[in-house]
Length: 292
Image (cartoon, rainbow, N blue to C red):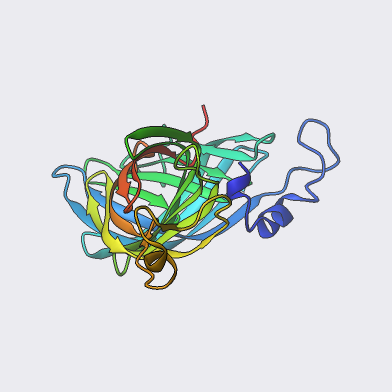
């Protein structure tokens, strides 16, 4: 979990000085107040067509004593603004891991047409919500930067296969431009490769699908690499001394030749195929971590 422990001070400040719990402490648990800008992936439920990808501000107040939550936002659906104000959503709260689960069976807002489900991981500030408007529309809401931590990467290089678990794959999506910056962190690509802290590629194309996003890119330079511990970022195979150190003809090992990735929002899964001049990899992963 260490990879996603960032920007915790505002969250922890909201949680500290909480007093005792409702089972005998000195004071009730304080409400958790969350204001975040989330990315909305809107789909027409009947046709499966993507209605749009946009952002909106979500305001969530979680009552940990009564295990309820209020949620408000404004969504763009079918070209029109739709105000959402939901009250007394039933939630579960796991204090040990600071995890709030929005129960999917809730009937909300005085209407039997709208339900919400999902979770808020307080400690890592990760939100995943699904709002269903009857048989008409479904909205998956996440932060624009999506993390996959439970991953497996299988890499082929010079006829050898190497598997590495738990690299961090990050897709930072710009909904207005429909582009993404992709970062692969803390990964080892072969038995002789040192741990690579970061491989980052910018400006990949994003296409919305009925289940999430396709992220694709070709021939993209790597953002300067941090922390390659045991090998050069260059491939000198078969080059003469002159080529290696004077003519600079070595190939950059980590330039992105091609990446094709599918992000499945409802199931929280990712699959990707990506390659550099030296490595060819297939990766799978889960969107952050689902609680049982």
